[in-house]
Structures are given as structure tokens and as C-alpha cells.
Image (cartoon, rainbow, N blue to C red; front, side, top):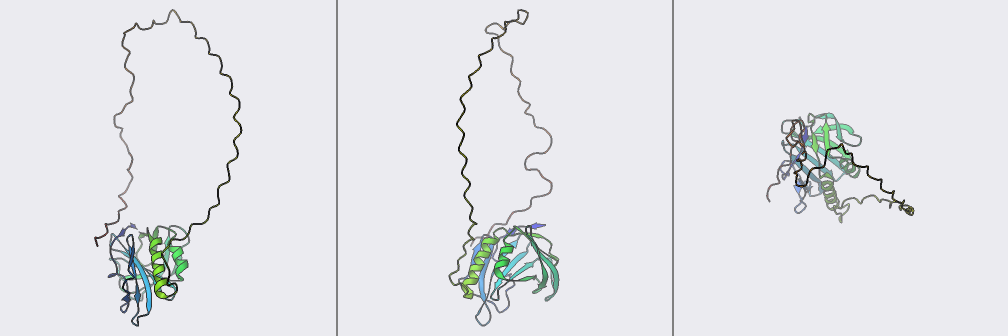
Amino acid sequence: MRRFALAGLLAATAPIPALAELIPGTEFSSGYWYGAAYTDDRGAFLYCDVSVGYTAGEVLWLGLYSNDTLAVLLMHPQVRFQPGETFDSWLMLETGEPIRQTAEAWDASYAGMTLQGIDPNIDFLTTGRWLRLLGMGIDGAYDVTGIAEALAMARACHGKNSGSNPFATAEPKPADAVAPPDPEPAADPAPDPEPEPAPKPEPAADPAADPAPALGTPRPPPKVPDLTPKPGGGLGLRPGGALGTPAPKPAP
């Protein structure tokens, strides 16, 4: 089943460690995605997160940590875990090769993978639209539209607050350079026009044919196409229900 994003500020539901403290002024949002930076109990930078909610209550949470790891966690309101429980799991999108490694339950609600290397895993997560994290009992495919912009902002948040890049900005990657097209070959000169053939003489009228109608005689009405509705399918018809639409964002 495919899930669609539901707007909402998810800081209260994200798996923030008990001693993590929000860094004021670091909050950001992109579409339905929301994030911020946090410190540990000593005031040292811990991570930047970004998360998105879905229409059935699920949450996808991503954390960029100070030790160059990226956590991908899922929460489903109908699935519960034993903290510390592990799973043989697959993280995949509709394109590219999946990642197979052990996932772990962080608490009774959230479980997922911790991936080594922030930048290569951002590249992996931004290659498709549908994300799945299989093996934990949550088998849906989740719409991650806007994840590239959201992770770019989370990466800039991480760079600024970790000190690794205090001037980081969430600018999109530059597009690959494209070679200019080859010039079109010069057109050949147009050939001289051929002389038009002489008109053929019209055949003489057959005296046995029906005579032409007299002047003032009305013509018969022309045939028109049959415009009555035909049975069967039409535009917009397909089996199954609508995939769903994102819920509206709440007013500030």
C-alpha cells in the first residue's frame, strides 16, 4: 500500500532522545517536512532531524548525527516493538539497489536502520519517490516527494550546528553540464518547380443521365454523425480507488 504525506509538526512524536534539547532558531520546513537541530545533555550538538507524517498516522523520521551517521526510522500506529529488538531488513526505493542490513527498535514505536556516511546515503535516499523499509512488519511504500529539498536543509542544518560547515546553505545540486547540440546541416537548395500539368478535358455530358435539378429546387439534407452516447469506459476510469491526497497543512 502506498502512503501519502500528511502535514503536521512532528517534533512531539519524533524519537528524540530523552536528554536531547532543541536548539532555538534552528527549526525549518519544506513542504510537508519539518526539522530542527538538537544538543545532548552537555549542550554539545547531537543531530539535525527531518520528519514527515502520513494519512494513516505513520511517521518517517531521518536523523543526521554528529558521528556522520544517518538514521532512517519508521513508526506505524498499529505496530509495536520491543526496544532493542533487531530485524533483517531491506531499505529500498523504486530505483537503484536496496540496502540490506540489521534494523533495530529504538523504542516501542520507532525502528529502523542507522547508515554510515551522511552524504552517500542522502544521495541514495533522493533517487526515487517511493520508500520501503521491509522486515520490521511495516510493509507500505511511502511517498517521499520533497525529500531532496528536505534533506538538503537538514544537511545545511547539520553543517552549521556541528561546526563542519558553518556557512552551509540548502542549495540544490548543480545540474550536470550538457553538451550543446550539433549544428544542423545546411539545407540543400530547393529544386526548380516542376511545370503544372495541363488540365484534362471534362467528358461530354451523357444524355441518358438524370438532368440537373432546376433552379430553386432545395437540396437534400447532408448526413450527420451519430452523437448519441456509446456504452463502455471513458477518460478517468480505472480499476481500484484513488491513491489518496495529502491532508492540508494546519494554519500557523
